[in-house]
Length: 376
Ligand code: ACO
Image 1 (cartoon, helix red, strand yellow):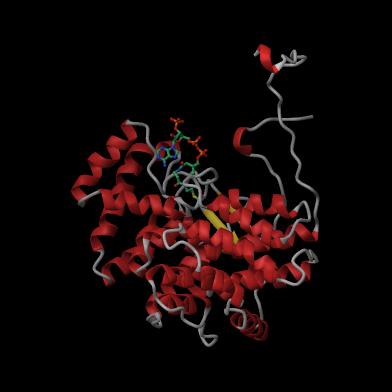
Image 2 (cartoon, rainbow, N blue to C red; image 1 turned 45 degrees about the horizontal axis):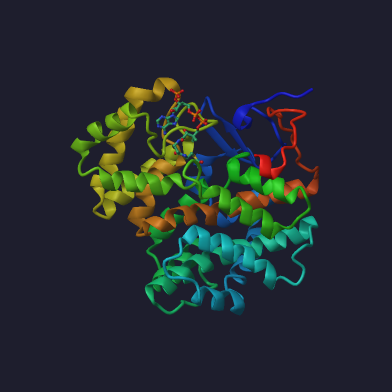
């Protein structure tokens, strides 16, 4: 019995206890907890613990998980040295994919696929990926690397290593909310890629490297950079109408809208919209927020009836811009957070593995003649 669904739409390919999505009602839960609850009450570290253990930690567990994570911020010397030799014009997502892959060569047992080893490797990657991004950004600016500060949280330390300056509590909290809201999302394309790779019993580094490659596509996590480019192309709020209508008439996609699963507003977009508004007001970027809001209203009027609403990438663009991040770091930010979800799924897959191996409908010819090369 085989069925074919282009793009695997509607196909159930795995079971998970990490995240639940109701695309019609616009609900996202991590281990049963609504995303809005986590965004307002939790921290990224606690969210990661939740995704990897499928329960909230006690105070002691959270303290020990956090201190373990912090003790691993520092990059192996070989990795820091490699970053210094990378081309300064390399694209950060290509850089991140390459350097996460390179971390395997600094692990004495990269192929250990016990669940315990997978957790340990995931913790390393989670702690070191932000250091990789921050060091690369400093390298391309010709700045010295900043040593990580283990007294700082995941979000604070990343911003500190990037800017050589501790972030304000408001900026660090905004960044943490972005990390929480992007951490996991069912069997999205990159998570599926990670699960497919680990299902061969390859290794955690290969699974996460493949997932980073998937995420950078403009139809997936790369859309947040597309949103920012679009906002930059629109001079003022008054120009939004002509811009959006022109694109829709030319059958072009508006980045940050539409989703395979959500046919209602993505609940992460709701969380990030509030954050974007606040940050835009606080940082003198109100115009950016107003342009985004105008685009949302036009899209609501034109295409909401087709189930096309803002997705997570739409307001994350304004949010990251207001936090002070460069455009080409937006998708890497998504990756830093989604490492939590990818790793959670890899751990889950290893706990009850079966090789992914779907079939394909062959639609080519049969019994074709082999024509010798000099007769073709
Ligand atoms: N702008 C305009 N029209 C759209 C958009 C959009 N952003 N998204 C979908 N549509 C239209 C399509 O043109 C199509 O219309 P038609 O039926 O008249 O031809 C219809 O909606 C269905 O589109 P599909 O591509 O079949 O839907 P699919 O489920 O494959 O697409 C996707 C989902 C890829 C996310 C799509 O909505 C898209 O390209 N969005 C823009 C990119 C984006 O924001 N990606 C981020 C997604 S969230 C994430 O991955 C983190």
